[in-house]
Image (cartoon, rainbow, N blue to C red; front, side, top):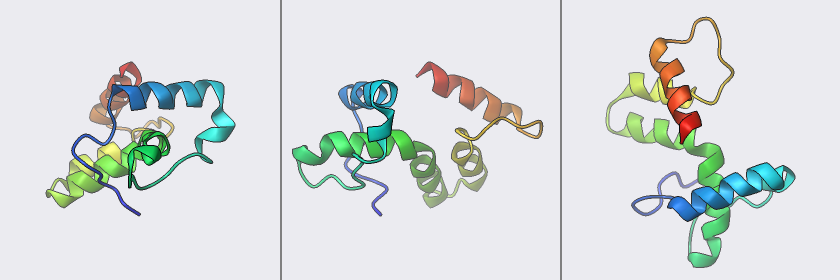
Length: 99
């Protein structure tokens, strides 16, 4: 599985595409994903992959640069809220919802 693509894994058009697929064709979201981008033809599927897996992608990148506490927060920001969640995790969820 490839976590990192080129610099800037997804641009604004990829995000728009992923949000529209998620909203209007949710049953296709997982089927159309591609975990690598070999050419421009793979970009739509790769954008869906990044959209769905961005918590794990971000956490892996943070781990790689020596930020395990931050990685733990980022990896959980799409999970259901619990009473034990830190204020940082709650804030990250709110920020992610605004994006």
